[in-house]
Amino acid sequence: MYFIMYYHVPKPDKCMIDQLRKLYPGHKIILVGDTEIDYQTAVNAEIDSVIVSYGFRTVEELRSFGIAELVPSVEELSRVLLG
Image 1 (tube, one colour):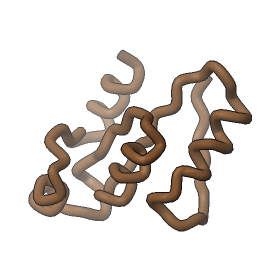
Image 2 (cartoon, rainbow, N blue to C red):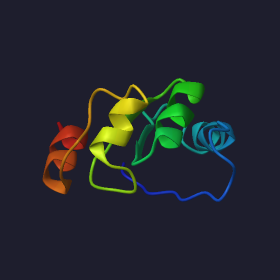
Image 3 (cartoon, rainbow, N blue to C red):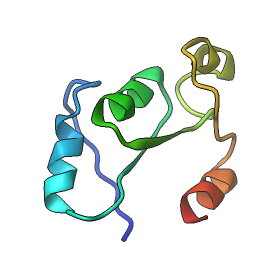
């Protein structure tokens, strides 16, 4: 099952992830984001994240926050998510 959910809650609060866990018990949750805050949200919620380098932050900015693995394109994101 694939779904997209947008939240307008303060990050890196993990409450949105907790809500997803309740709505979809037993499903794996992966946060796809483009900022260090998205990454920290996933860390706080103890879930996997995929951070893309073609969004809000530059590669250099993301690396400065200690994010080592970055996905450079939509095509690569599809490969990462779909295996």
